[in-house]
Length: 507
Image 1 (spheres, rainbow, N blue to C red):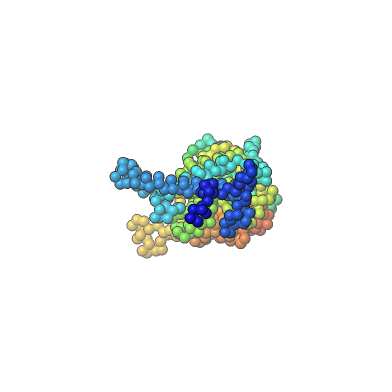
Image 2: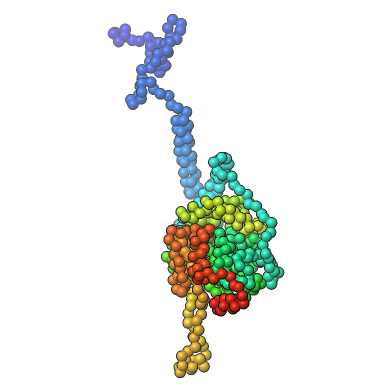
């Protein structure tokens, strides 16, 4: 009976079934009562959840749902569409396998051998597309970034001569006149350069002191020179020879090449050796497909290059037309940019300090403007392809070797009773190579290969020097170079007797 008498009223029973809201009805009005309920570890005040926490929780839940949805879709596709009995696998399985085999050469450059190139390069392509999309969307203006200078096209200023095939070649003369030159130097320029380069920053009085005539010219399609329909390194050497004859260089002349411009210097040593008095090269480029180059030597060069440089090398070898897009986004965009980005290279500390100097920036901008004067991408693609394709010769062809003629019965009988007639082949004149040991554009490993193949070449290893620091805007370095090549300065020729002595020295 006590349980019955002590039972709660119906209002109390209803209240026990409903969560306590903290509201009490008294005398026709409501009053609020704060809940005493707390959670272990929370403060008594019970801070409310912020909007940031709510958004993070929502995004996390949404991401988990999307992942589960993706896994479900993947399972459905695997179980219904990519089984061996499905229509899609039967129709596309064979072609996909064939494509995978054809693309397996990509594993030699970027992927491990056990990776499927179709799957891997599809993922890489998607990543590239997403990256380009993100870069395209990001259009915010940062006032801290310096204003981009536009490339200007200057009025024509070069001397030009008519080649036998009707094209014009532009050239630039520096130093002493032709009739007073004790030594003549012809310098083809490197990639993204022009006849204005030569030896950057060299002073005219220094050339006159040594009696040097320095001649530079625009390669076909660069600067003010007309493009060549089908050019190679053989035609490059013959054009250099025609230039020498046309401007009055009747004796032997020296050739000078820097970086990729050395490619044309090597060609001159191979195809017109009888007219070359010697060669001066600075960080000379070498084809990585040289047949005598070892895998270790290639790897030492390859690992020094930045990823963009490797990509440009790969495109030049396999898909040269794709270079059009990259060139039009950089130096053919009509705007100036940093040299390391335009050439897809990395620079050492001394090179970085050099390119920040105002005189270098002024020279670089003017040289690039002259190089892209014709706004034609084809010459640049041709030059890039020439660097990585078959040159038509190897550096081993320049090795000094003794060649004895023993073909035929008569020479063989003579060799039995007398010493066989032999002659030296290869390039017999001096070759000087200057190589910066901190060079990351043309690593020292390339010059190590050259010195191994051409034992007679003199290599000057420059400690703490980069790709540009010794050759560009260094008066002391320029004097050292001319002294190494020509000895003590003797000044220009003064009379016919001096001219005869100079021709004898060249012989």
